[in-house]
Amino acid sequence: MRNTNTNGRCTRIHSKKNDNVCRCYSDLQLKYLERIEKDDNVVRVELNVKIAIPNIDEAYSTDFLLTLKDGTTRIRECVYKKQLLRPTVAKTLDLSRNYWLSKGYSDWGIVINEKE
Image (cartoon, rainbow, N blue to C red):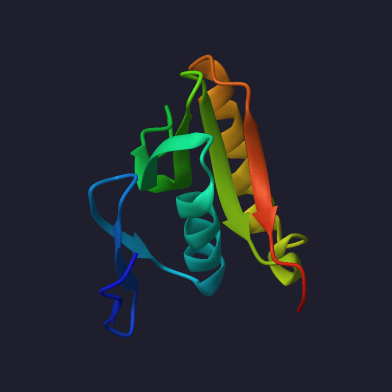
C-alpha cells in the first residue's frame, strides 16, 4: 500500500483489497485501513460507503464495509474517544447501526483510537 497522496482534506491510498484508491478522512481511518490491508481474513474493503437513511435528508456514509473470507460482512465506524460523548456523534452512530441492522448485517462496530 504505497503512493500516499495527501491533499489537505484526505489521504489517498491504493488498496490491494479494493484494487482502487481509498480516501481516508482521518488518521484513525488511515491507521485502520493499514491494519485491514494486513489482515488475511479480510478479502475486500470499501471506505466511505454512502447510505440512504429513510426520512433523513442529510447524506451519511459508513467508514468501512469489510468482506471476510467466509463471505460475511463487517461494518466499522471510526470515532475518536473525545468525540464519543457528543450528541451528534452518538446520533450518527445510532443511525448507522440501525441502518445496517435493518439490512440484515449484525457485525457492526466502532473503531476507537487508543490514545488521546
